[in-house]
Length: 400
Image 1 (tube, helix red, strand yellow):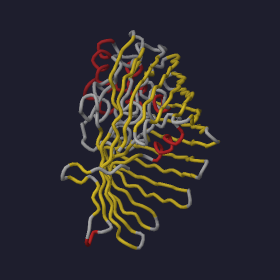
Image 2: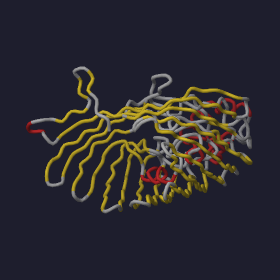
Image 3: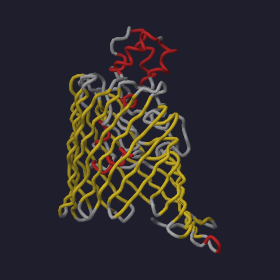
């Protein structure tokens, strides 16, 4: 981590005297570029923030308490480089058709914009939407409290060739045909408490969260855990997590397994995910809008029963890396299938700055409308069921 001093303000400050073992650090990522897309409406151009990695600014702090104990904090805020804001929406102009399938035309027109909202990432414009935790690290493990990454997403990140980012990343298709409304993996959980332990490359975590949590910040309960293994060649894990809706019914269930293996200049990736949701947490909120009769139709459309796999490789070539992957998702509930093909090249300009180019093609079949975005934003939907999508990204990323 690069340490900076600006004027009289110290961004990384070791405390002295009684707090000699304490420090605080400011860090961040600025990632931006252009995306050229074809989502069925011709060619569109977007200036986008967070293509390879979500742009952010964060603060980490810790204090050594002695005898293997220490406290820590981490606050992390999203940054939209293109606007300076902290929220964003789909870049595709299309509305997803699957969630309104079977509704009368008038109801469909009224409900469509609500199910494809203008803002889908950090909808409440929360300042520390990415991370907000305080914790105690002990010789027996760490206890972390607050908004934090989920156990399943931690495993997804290990198994994704494109490192949980870009238009070619596995995460672009780890959801149902309803986009964010039918998310397959909760990335973060609010109101969460997590226990983590690490020992000689083996790790485990258990997490529980309560009220307004989970994939849509609408679930009543969230539970999850993972097992992890890492050495010089392997980095793998397996996880399971479950959400409950406000009525206490089982909602999103996610199982993920996968990781990577280093072999010379090559790094091989593979992952599998099963995602099921019979009671979407958003459906009860629609009853006052469209009535119980139509809500049952939307509830059926919002069901998720999906299997997904991803395989790929990175190859180190001088100061750069070549990336290539194939990912597939078969979504039984909505009769949707997609195959995502991606290639890219990332070139290091320094230890902290790199440039990249990515090309991705999503072959949608049956009712699928997947459209790729980036690490920090969503693509949305293609113009119609079975309409395929493509994206070309160029960008620069700087970390400090």
